[in-house]
Image 1 (cartoon, one colour):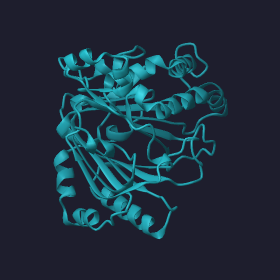
Image 2 (cartoon, rainbow, N blue to C red):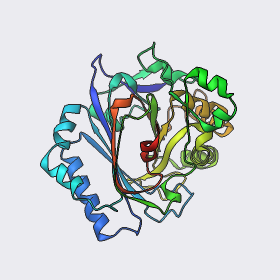
Image 3 (cartoon, rainbow, N blue to C red):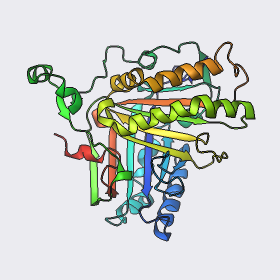
Image 4 (cartoon, rainbow, N blue to C red):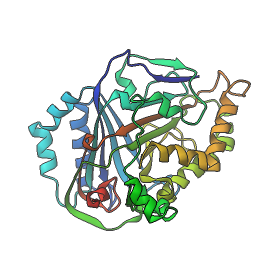
Length: 353
């Protein structure tokens, strides 16, 4: 059983915004003031604001604060537009210093190209702004995400291929297909010390980029379930996360970060609430990465055996797993990066042809 967003046959043009503040010198008074101002502005308008911290997941010092990230949702795009053009919001962005380390990535898309799925009947992210979820048995097979998205005549294929794939394809085939080669940076901002001063504005990204937010949390989880999670699920989840982060070009991962939820009550980093935010070249690359990596295949198998029919946690498990997925068209993305580290988000796409 899986729970999906129930739009009750209504179509919405909504806004999905990611807003971040980098802490390159720790949590200073200046960055604290920026975070507080941004949080106040977002909560004054957005229907839902999630606060995420710590881009680390074991690849950097867990106790060091690298970034504060807000994921904000507006079910009505016109409400966001009015807020973004207001004097107070404009003043916030216009007065940032050239090395501020602040960015926004804003996606405005119809709900027909958005998918939400969860293993429990709970709402998270955009679905916090709708009345209910609907139960479904449409699950457990490769390609299910594509089947849940509308626009059946659209292949959602990127006009680009990765440099890794281009090496396996002859120049003649690449040219005949009309595809262009995109070089994907090997690492994100955690591995960079170079700041791009000033402002970088990004619009008109390649068609069909796929954004994915995956998350897990264990509220009120029993000791038995936590033990099974740490023993059987966490190792495969960690290997999957590291695989995507460390092999970006191979998987078509344009940007990837993992965050700890601010409200997490669990001290064990393997079980605390976590979120992964990722941009893939397209939906096909996202699905292919999951199929090809043995750790992810085993992760799916283990979760289904634990929580599915006959499993030890069938009907009693409390762990919550969810995914949000968006497919973007070129003109549905608007971003600005102010004094950010190289490798932040999709900033490098500013330089593609």
